[in-house]
Length: 101
Image (cartoon, rainbow, N blue to C red; front, side, top):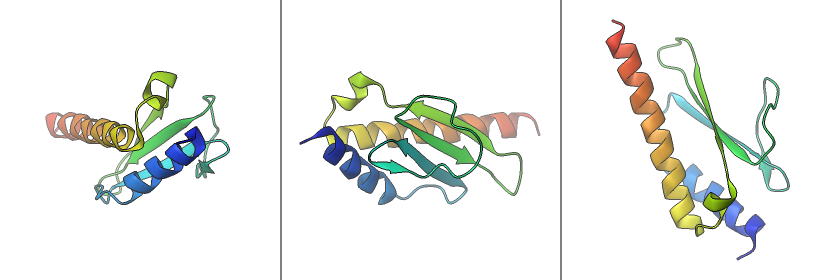
């Protein structure tokens, strides 16, 4: 599978995964999909950006560069890895917010 086709499959797998409704997933993958709408693009691509805004609070953002060693995984393994990273990001923010109450 070509890298472009693999990344398109990864995007489809991630988009079909149930994600917390307070989280938006945006893509900066030149030649495949770019959905970043606001702000400046600071990193060279490709990367995926997670934005988590609970209860209209302060939005938390994390950018996950898609490094070459990640791109060597097959589409399903890469999508699972990205989803796992997203879940960890949500857990970290939740623990920070609950710890400050």
